[in-house]
Length: 477
Ligand SMILES: [Zn+2]
Image (cartoon, rainbow, N blue to C red; front, side):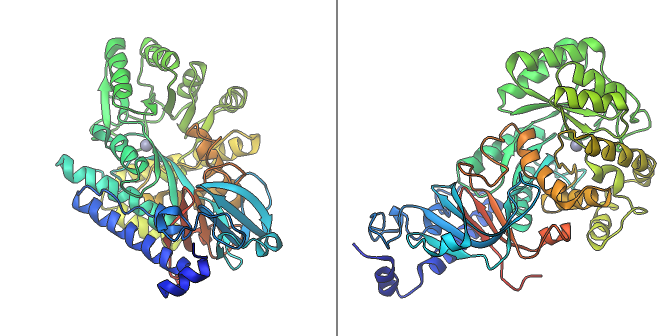
């Protein structure tokens, strides 16, 4: 049985470094295989990240003091933002065992821990992985490729890039055609490919002449039977929640405005009764007070957009603990509103896709949307970050920037993109915070995101299930 030191000597390489290099290679192989549409039987980082895992050989599973034990990893010398507390915790170490947070200690505590692989974060900022709780995987393509295979690959590449470039470790989809989101959810969960956790909604259920007409991700229904069938089809195809469009929106034809409500009461009843009966959460596109109240009255789990609200909507959301996902990006990102380099860069790409009249509608909605976002925030409504924009690597970061420019603190935005998003996905007991027992989906960023929310862009490392899956060069700006 060899100790870690003996192994390192015989292998001629420092194990941590070897593990990181192998992890990187595996990850790149995964992404490349994905883009080629090829199956990938193995090559996931779990066994390579931990130098001490049984599978890495060398009998390192022995529990002799001073040796590497099991899959234990220690992240030392971090500034911790745990997704729960209002204040960060300096000089903290996080111990990860078998993919979960085993303990949180002071950095002094870490220095005596010799049985684990240790990563010195050198004062960088450790947070739960980020989430985007309102995603359409085809965006920024309004008209994605016609070919289903090409779309499938494109959507998967978008999700993978989100994890790799922005540390997005979880998403909730709000309308994706052909249940491609369910397919990728399964592919990522099986660890054949490395990507974010997906909470899938399949098709966006709407009406003829309802919001989303003409988009590839909508299923237009009429009458209670058709709505019931649509909900059942979603369930049969493996979705986690049902996305329902109750009212108009910003990006649609003139008969699809925010104040227009699309469903008949009996159609809403059919959807909510079925979903309540089958225990499926309803993710409600609702953009005016009547739509919001009709949805909450019937048991809505979340309200998406809420461009126009009233005091009663806020009161009802508080009373029923409905979660609000404001998607500020939709009303706030237009050529006349951009305010920083990232928004400008996004807009250059987005203006090629969006007709000017949609931007005019965004501009018209923006001020009131901001007002109700602020009111909900102040009242303490449960909220989550969801961008409704793509690509995935940009959406949540843009949305969090807008939260802060509209008056949220960076800590509020971070919580909404971590614990808040895990809550809206119904998985807050497992994910979204850095607490003992939680699954270790984590990111490390170099500079303090509480000083400037855009410091989240200085991504250094991403961990999923406790595995180091992405490591950026230290000098990356
Ligand atoms: Zn949407």
